[in-house]
Length: 271
Image 1 (tube, rainbow, N blue to C red):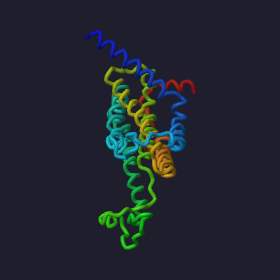
Image 2 (image 1 turned 90 degrees about the vertical axis):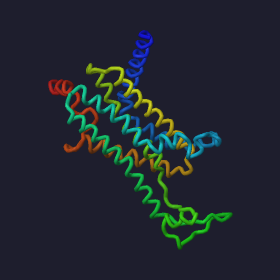
Image 3 (image 1 turned 90 degrees about the horizontal axis):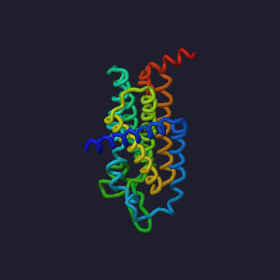
């Protein structure tokens, strides 16, 4: 049993080292958002190669219900544990950890709040339709979504995909936060098996989001709705992580801020 435990620990250590190097690489930090943009932009053109009987062709499939619709919650749950550990261990400052956790609170609020704006846009631009072969009948007397759906009709408005928005935003937030682990390891801070497992769980979640984003874009009914959803997710990430968190003094700060004082001191000496 001891030998097996040592082998598993060594495997966890190896996998976490590889993932940390990949997520902390320059190519990943500078080009990951371009990869997501390419996925959302190109994948829908491959719909002819997709299998219409696939589980992902049904919008109510297991992965959509359990992961895509709850992606904000999963991201906050797993990522908060990782951020708490990597910020508290090297500094021993609970207030600094709370500051970094507040960054996740902002991201989660954006992730959950923007889809409500999408729904509001659909309400304002929509109209009630009654399915009647060979088309639909426009019902002007029913002016709200609630009254329309209460009578069994369909409300058609401008719909922006909340699935591609949340998957894109959560993927970018995960990649941004997990990139810190490479610096953490290089500084020689304690990295036990439990911390490495938490890191690998987050990395696995990031990989899953990439796969789900590909499937969502592949089976999306409308190309522009998918692309706009991903574009808004990228914009929210850029305004927060690349804008507010980095440039504004009174903000939660970027990932890793205040966690590596020795590295900051070395830079000052070099300057």
